[in-house]
Length: 474
Ligand code: FAD
Ligand code: MLT
Ligand code: ZN
Image (cartoon, rainbow, N blue to C red):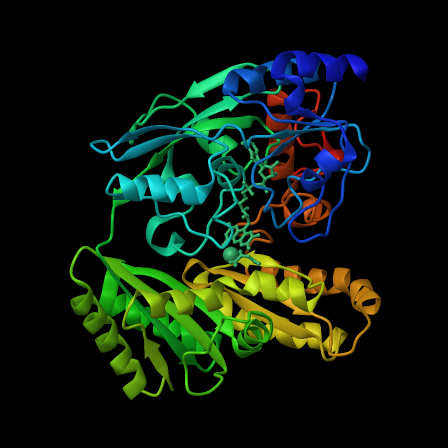
């Protein structure tokens, strides 16, 4: 052990090898406070070459490595296990914006750059980087890539995989794959880039990326709209899409229970409607025209739905401040859930057409097993992605609910299975869902994944216990 630490300190500098409990503490628990791990050391390399040197040293000593970006994972992906054998490799010091090419519409960044910084740099260059999520002030580009993050603008711009052109990756043996190309077309073999995206730190450590930039929207129009339920929200989605086309950038759904929870726990959140609705949708349009014209287009699209009775109430933001207040509600949900207590969280996706039926069936099924259980449902409805969270019945002891949670999760995921959906739409499998992989993935898929893992990381040093269950390794 001493040799390992000494060698790492020799390669990275002592200040970048954290061994004290106090220094390591922020790196050893996850954002939800669900997982607490232990590490031999937390290391903070400052470049891709540093990462490569560290990986060669760890490979020589057979030390497992847990890559960590902003540590905002919702599935415990960046938290080491409790064995204390792992090295946590933080990418936080790889924080340079390497290049902005306003002709090719690309930005090249280190993997440790915080998402909000990339958004700001693109804006400063008169362009736009669309990935947007509640954790954007602390999550990193490397974490967004490793988890193939989604967020609130997927409807228009796609997931992180669709926003990425090139990658730089350090392999488990310390070799560096330089795939940092800015090519939108390149048919020269297997798409290695896409293999590393979504691999949750189990196939390689991403140290750099070339990302797509877009024209900066000059106009935004936002509305907070009441609807009866999921089915009504889907009808509204079709109506708005029909009238507004690709200008539709976000369509975020929240049930009434979810809204009540947010208003209870998020002090500066205010309901912009005259009464608490059954459910609500936050709609955003964006384009290159002028804002009044875009707002008129949104008003016209909603007017038809108000007339038809589909929409009982709606508020349209008259300026950026009001739009921000709408988003404060939506972005407050994760925090509100944590303040309310331990929720059984589910990040699921299915065909958009199956969502209303899923919510109805899941609500009945979970209430049969756990009377009084409180579904808190919200999410990226236009992408077929819902966060179906369950809170204990009012007054129920947390331990009693915790004992029920595995059964409730099985029920929710069985409903997803019936609709050929996914048990992880955007948060990743991490350690939260790894035990379910043999139940939810076909044996052939798991076998192919294990063979790829074995090819790229034969010693199994990269993020062990995440994504792939150990037992079925070939
Ligand atoms: P970490 O949490 O540090 O790591 C995530 C995973 O990636 C881990 O498995 C880790 O080992 C691996 N990893 C990290 N960096 C690297 C690297 N450079 N190379 C290889 N592997 C690496 N996610 C969404 O998709 N959509 C949302 O709307 C969304 N909203 C959120 C809201 C809140 C309030 C919070 C707390 C989280 C939210 N998330 C959301 C989840 C999370 O923010 C994302 O998964 C994000 O992409 C993680 O980035 P990170 O830098 O924090 O990664
Ligand atoms: C969101 O959409 O807010 C996130 O994915 C986070 C969550 O599920 O809590
Ligand atoms: Zn989400």
